[in-house]
Length: 627
Image 1 (cartoon, rainbow, N blue to C red):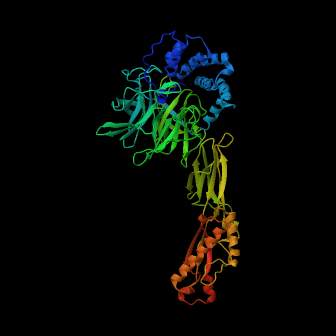
Image 2 (image 1 turned 90 degrees about the vertical axis):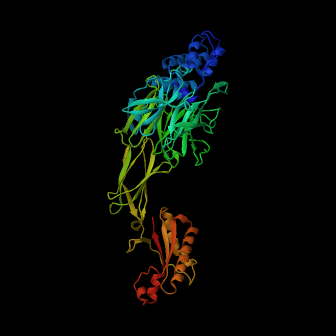
Image 3 (image 1 turned 135 degrees about the vertical axis):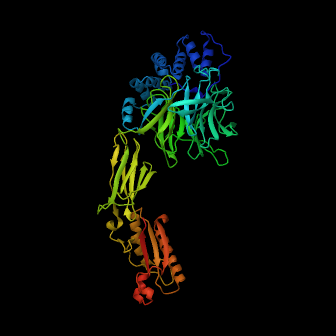
């Protein structure tokens, strides 16, 4: 596919190189190295068709989206030079074939490249049944140039985008189009109105693109190509930096490159998190998996920046991942040529779970094409957004409305009930986990005890039902190619009281573990040997049910001073808790409390007429199940 050189590694205007059609090979290779592909291809066509010439000629066509010419030249290259060709040419040849939807032939080269069987048609067939949304696209009107892309939200009804519409700019050697500038416009009725270039503080004699704004409109981040080239691996490349600008007194000012940018590599495509404390971007900086990866960096309260963090191999591949966008719901959208898709850059989504991102999902054929689809942004509250694509032969802006894919509605639903009585368990907690046991969603069920979670295709999940004094139930399920799309899972929870003879509900509705009486020596809180034997029953029960949480409460009779009795009961409860911990029960599952003489079990205390046996009833330890 055509690389968006103004996005990937924008170059300056080729000057001082005057080549005739019959120029020598060294000089045309120089054109190829600086990515002047249009002119390079014209000259390579006049040369003897050596392996080097065919490789560079095919790549020149490929990077400029002249796919039929690229395919013809790659085919000639493979016929003539076969096994001596580097494996990366199989990947590019396959992408060119996918660009014209020749998936069967492309799969042969992808299978060799990945050393495993690739079946794109089967992938597409399955994806149509699994993609979460379908999109209704319409090309945005008033695009009076050969390249408009990267539309972003800018206030309530304003947008910003990059365009090559300024014909007074010099032409760019990659594609012979004018250099890019940034523009603002009003968006209404799928039309761009009042299109205005940003000031000269933003637009320079280089490329500018991909602007993103803070919610107050006072800060902008955007791409700008370096004005100088950096010689890297024998190539002279003008890299891209992310710049920050501030809006003050009616104009953009304080335009500065971010501190982690460099003349040695590119940083591009800034995107802000909802809280504006994290900046996502693409870069080919050291530490990438290959080509461009998605990174994020913390924006500190004092305006400084943390260390850029690579999002890792779940998101990034050895090929290009670019154009990140992070939604208000913490869904990461980005474009990739490395994940399986339709051809060229496709748009993917990945949910953030516990600060990590899960396996990306292709957004499907209603938004992705066999060519490049990129710069996706969405407002989830109204399911509207923008995407850019070169499927028409030029970079174009598209608006879209998305809705749930009704062919297959991914969800898990059910009710929570008592295992023995079938009573609906109102107020039960139902939790959805991913395959790494990370919590994705949870809910407390209402009067109908019903729950429902939306889920994603090609994932493994676990749903758990819990309720106070009940044994939790876990059910695992899958939405992969062998799993179901919709799951009806009835959670039947058994109470501890039904499952265990020693667990009983008292008159106040508390569920307690009934143990033999625990004795303490007079005025002591140490656990005696006979008490340890009794407590072993509770230890075994809590080890049997790892979710069980218990409150250890100690009570005294009414003889003696109130404060003395309260302090003594606290010591005895705490001592009992420590003994349970010493037997291997996690401290987080226990709570101790001393009630002193405040919760007697008989009425004689109030009247002060208890006999010794009645006083003895109140001197006790209780073990109440909290969860």
